[in-house]
Image (tube, rainbow, N blue to C red):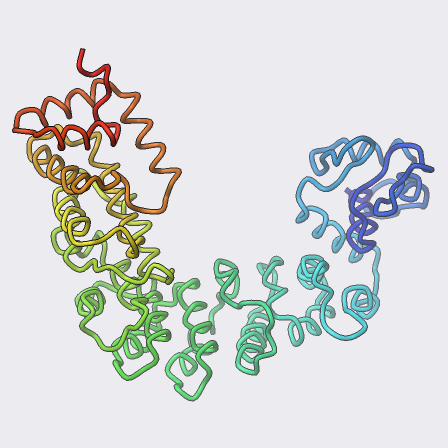
Length: 438
């Protein structure tokens, strides 16, 4: 463990790509030779020892490392090296000011490649933590906050929100959303409460406060979240964040209050983010599929927000009983849309067709499924209309390979009248193969 830390400090802090285990004269410039890691005494809660080349090779033979080519070994996961480098500095008693000299750039700010080491070091060293809380709050979220005091977490939350408000943050504060659950502590709700409703604060600051509340599941903030979510004159992006938070912070009274937002009847929502989060809150526990699908309307294909995400994840939640209203919606969408634009909705319609294919022989689904396929093939249109080409190819391969289901489809189709052009469309789409005629 100690030697792994030594290797981590040398490679991560020294910006070395790999450890070179071959002849030292052939060592690449970006690598560190094995001999440079050997020697020197290690003391600790173990029998003191001086590391040999064989000791280093034994460490490199563990699961923490993987090959980088002939005579080259590197970290199996960079996170192993970042943690061990921080632990090594801490166990060696390196002063906080010395660590900071290694972690901070002379021009100011944390060296980006060392942000993981800094986060773990702050988790181990209180002195280092105080400095980094003030200057690098986002980087600290990568470390372990479980041993931090409530006071330290309060300081980190304040510093993080202050950095966003003052535009001192270069990284997106929303890119590592799951890490905000680490900030939870007894006084967090009281700290966030005034920020959520303060319209004088910047948009990003309020959105971040809402995201922290959501990830920490602060149910005490339900009144403030509802106040923002239902205020039609507030910023739509902030309102969307409040609706998203209410999914985890609200009680049984929330769905009825949010339902108008799912129908687009609760004020401006230019990007449908309020609607998307409202649907995510309501479906499937507080809304039936018959209520849901009439609310799904096409949106711009160049926008991927909460509404598009909801449409993308919706198919995984559909049950067999939901397929009838889903097919009705998909059929109407395909009938009314052209070949261009509306690809988020078309992707959802494709997925509904994929899910209905194994189920269409159920009596209540057979006719709606046949009608759906007929609408897709009218005017020699392609069978699939969305943009998920991998899913489309998987579906077409399944149709081609499952002769029994394809024959069930063709027999149901053949119960009605078909003209020559209709038959050509099914053949062209791969729903009718030459060998099926036998």
